[in-house]
Image (tube, rainbow, N blue to C red; front, side, top):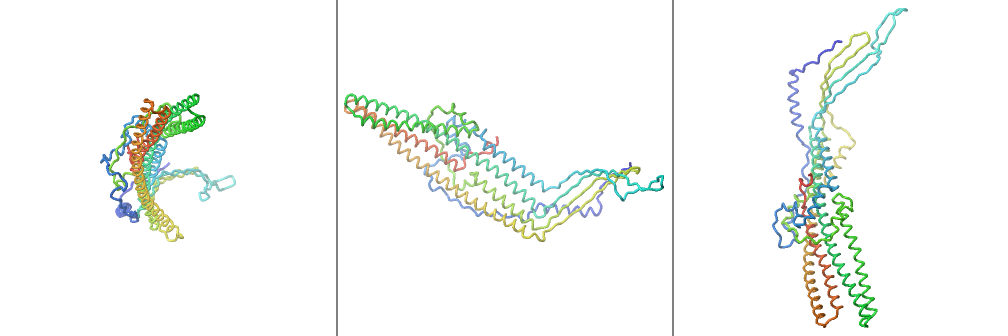
Length: 492
């Protein structure tokens, strides 16, 4: 079998002309003449917050990353660490980042030539290959079978003259960046939810203890009225009224108990555990954290870089702008270079095998002439999508301002209510001490002491609500600021 060697490629004069042209095309492929500028109007944030308290600490902005540590509660810190490690929403967001990065790599691969290996073989009969052979009756015709095999490499490269492939790669990269910002947004929401549910749980448990004490006081008052009734010092109406009050107060206990269980179950899901898994760890009543984080000095302009939802909206604008440029590139010609090289062999029965090495270089240029408005429609749709995300970016910033202002209003209101409840509790404590002092001197009855104690517990319950609201409002402020995310924490 005679096989010819593949020819060695030599640079001829014709090739010397082709190579500079290829270099120019490669240089042009890096240009993106169809690129679209940033359509977002310049956002002018207000200079400061309208409802921010006058006294704010100039905390280090780094405190935004680990703001929950300002509560100085080891149990809360442990819950946060576990949530960052096991939360399913974070795991989903991380998987979406991997997906987006893979799609970016796929889009970027279109910038480079594609090379493939092809091989084929078979057996066939062809009428044009006929050999005459002698027979007993004379000369006859024989159509022999031929074995054929071919193989080689094929390369194809679309020169990105007008930046379509570059812009598609930029759009994919912007979407991957947006997936990372979505992860940060999930983390901000997760930390706020864990802290809020934990603080509300401690508040409910504190209120449950106060309610149990109140129930005991009312039971004591009912027992006293029943004893007085036996001596003629009270009547059945007093007893019935006190029993009604006692049963009504007792009915609040299952409500608080179920609320505590629901909060524990919610925390367990946030931590990536079965709902009942935290019962033993958090069922014991504990006090609210005595410390609260300081309110950082973050100006409205800082939200543009701090809040992940704003950063996500900005990447959507970048992606859609690149998509519009890629759609516009369809109006321009496309140049494709191709190259093929390999060998083919033919073997016929009784005939020596024939083999030949082959190669081919080619190029093609296509340009749209008539598409019934399809390309223009795609451009108009991409332009409309860009307008949508640009408007959404501006709207998201306004919503962020609203979110922070509302958080400041809620925080200020909770501080004022806590101050009022502090004075109310002081007055209730004073009333109880006076009633008890009068009772000790015989100037007051025992029921008055119990009533004063019950009133003090009712105020204490409201005070516990106010204390919980203050701490939850601080969490809401940090969530509105976009605090609680770092790439290191989210991707560990």
